[in-house]
Image 1 (cartoon, rainbow, N blue to C red):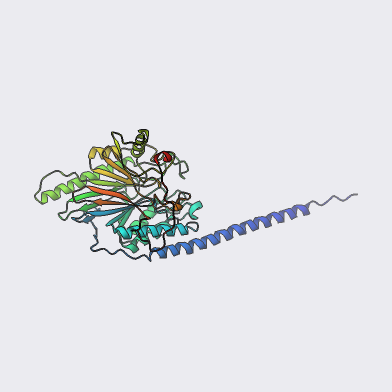
Image 2 (image 1 turned 135 degrees about the horizontal axis):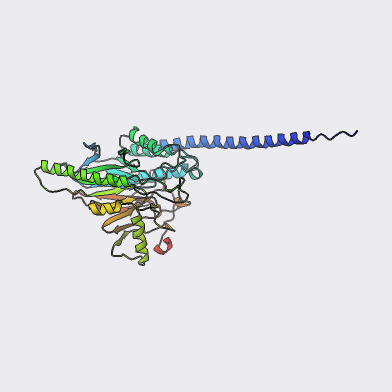
Amino acid sequence: MRKEKDNTRPKKKRGRIFLRILGAILCVILAFVLVTTIVTIIGSQANYHKAKQFAPLQYDAQLVPEEDEAGNWSFVTDEPFKVLQLTDVHIGGGWMSLKKDSMALNAVAAMVTAEKPDLVIVTGDVAYPVPFQAGTFNNKTGARIFAALMEDLGVYWTLAFGNHDTEAYSYFSREKISRFYEEGDFPHCLFKAGPADVDGFGNQIINVKNSDGIITQSLFLFDSHSYTDNDWFGVLWKYDNIHENQVAWYRDSLAALNAQNDARLQALGMSGKSSIPSLAFFHIPLVEMKNAWDAFAENGYQDTDNVKLIYGVAGETGKVVYCGMHEDDLFETMQELGSTKGVFFGHDHLNNFSVDCDGIRLTYGMSVDYLAYPGIYKKGAQRGCTVIDLLPDGSFDYHPENYYQAKYISQYEKESVTMQEVTYAEAQ
């Protein structure tokens, strides 16, 4: 009788080969994870130490804020008060972004050092924990490096959150990053999480007062949130808006501030009803900015009856202005109350224009970003800061400043960039 052929040996051999291949793949993956983790730890620690090596600012007489009875920070001065707006710093904090993170530190330090502002306001996206560009999910690393830089410089600072500061996949939530800023050992950080019954984190007010205790300007910071309509990861660019209870907070806060001013005027033997001037800062632009730009473009890039270009160009393509998905009542409330005359935001890194829209200035801050947009580290026309001077009479002046000017002396060598020119037609 013929013996049946034994087929088990080839099967066992194939099984062993498969397991060896699988084991080799797992070893490669583990080695890659181990190496990139080590590089991230060593590299981000090097950038952290670099952030602490910049020379502190030398003020003749630095203004020191105090908390008032309402829990708001207040600066007292009879002189112009300088605010420096930074936006979209985008510190990745991972192995893929180490060099670009270092460039961002250089830029921020050079501009802050030259301008010597009384206050720095960052309108979102300090951190950029996007793994395929930064090489990490850890959003606290970027926040930690930036905080170290600002504290080393010794400038007072705060921020409004952007969509990238706390991604859905980031290690740390908005609440935890808020606690990091608010409760950390950062003597110059003025960030406050804000009222618990108002949506978001970082809704806060900073006041400038004169020596009589009269508020001459209030600065409102809003959390403009991240994504909406089930776009959890932001791949569809469905951005959120300022929420209804934030608008109510703004309205109620202005009423309280006006009452506070009225009481102070009465104590000084003066009469009159206060209407405190204010500015607003947040990350994602209002839909009114898009409407204003569209009206300007449709009019052949000429001013209209309601929209006047103050300065700048639009470098973004497509929608040009990537605002919130839905309508909100913040702009209408600002018009109604007549307090806020300027709104400053970031988000669209290649836009650096300012428009007057029905009497309210809507302004993109100059961005810092070296990381988020492909190839943006090679471009220079959009990189810089926005200087805002608050005047004692309640008015304000503002202007953009490009980082690559000679006055911004970097402690380390500046990178070479192309100073691209963008026309309105190209931006479309």
